[in-house]
Amino acid sequence: MMKYNTENIISYNDMKLEDIIMDASSFIKLNIPEKKTYLHPWIKESELIMICGWRGTGKTMFALSILDAISRGGSFGPWSSHEPTPCLYLDGEMAAIDTINRIKSLSTSEPNKNFYIYSDAYATQEGKRRATLLNEDWREKIKTYLIEHGIKVWIIDNASALSPGIDENSKEEWDVINNWFLDLRFSGITTIFLHHEGKGGKQRGTSGREDFLDISLRLQRPSNYNKDKDGCRFIASFEKDRIPDKDRPLIQNVEFKLIQNDNKPIWEYGDAKSNTQNEVLKLFHEGLTNKEITEKLKISKSRVSQIKKSLIEDGLLTNNNKLTKLGAQKIFGD
Image (spheres, rainbow, N blue to C red):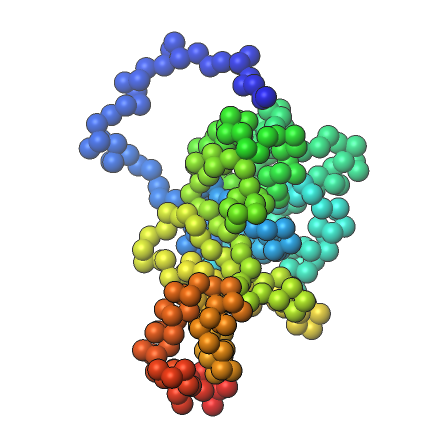
């Protein structure tokens, strides 16, 4: 069991609470700037974000693409960044050459100077000690580096590789790391950590890992995913967020697919809900019943009925499961 370090306990004897406690009318008048947005609308300053997904879903390429966009001041999927921001990617799992090849594939141009890489494999080859979230000295070193180099967003890939030996089901053992993440938040740094999904479709291990999260994002394979044809294809599903209602359309189950275009990987993205509706429409056209569509797409009967109702209301399908002229145009084009 992990123990808290009590050697450097801070004394509160000289602390005057009158200096920091004030009435609400005074507190709201403090000159504190609004959070900066690094990737609109969901990656902001001083936040803690978890991205989880089943192994092989595409978490690493998703993470690298996010940092590439933020470091350039560009866009990724439906999300945009408005100015280049220093970022760091901490890879605790892959061989260095694999990390290099993935970074090379991100863009047609050279990676910029705002994109920093910490490869634990390379560090080990250079005779350095392994990176670990469990060691207080390492945590202080990386925090100092982030602050001194002005890095505002960093991604940890992944929680399991960088906390070896921890009991993933123990909230107490994760609390040390969780509170350090809070320390980074209070220092103005946004932390994103990747984590594995368990068999039940939730993040693996203690629910305490989610206590301080601003965003919990799950990468899940679509119901009609074909492993032989689809490769890296997933739906980005926001399961916890603090995003204003006006921006919610930008985070509504975005579907991503990584395709090859002239031997370069390109991200395609779109509305996952719309894609599911199109699949159901095609299957009705092929003569499948509600039950058969439920089994094929692995969605609930009520979901199929709901989609069918929507298709009829939108004038794409008749009550007898036949395509209308508009429905035919939707599937086959003009």
